[in-house]
Image (cartoon, rainbow, N blue to C red; front, top):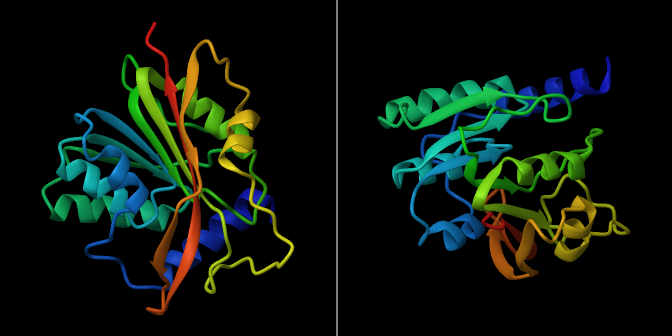
Length: 213
């Protein structure tokens, strides 16, 4: 199998092996960033079980949610419909290394990418650069990465290095005349793992804003 086939098989298997979520939780870095923003057009890269997408839709956002896993996409479509949010949520399967969702005319107001990490080959900087270009003037790109290893993380390599938010921003190679870094920090929080255990973890948070023309 090639890299894409391996990745699809793996992520489909991960979601299929567990019961479909009925009320997935949103990520705290999303809620703290977006709570005071007026609703508009949003794009979520790597929607997973859909906690962020549903949280946004409930607040009036129109959300395009994408994931590599068809299982995740199908489950989110069904879940959004069950909550009466089908008109605000469009879930699509994309291999972001080869395809990218079409945005609304004028661009997205918000693009989010939480923990867009994978053991498979992906030019993540190119994906996030394209996401920044998909923003309308004044729109925000929110990137949240792992800044530490949790006890339940799939990668327990003790020598793993987590690039700082500033390093991620530099890797996007965006023209500072058109984009500005609004936030780049490493807050800590108490996280809960799949088995219910808790641990203190570090998030790397980057917010890039496309300047108004």
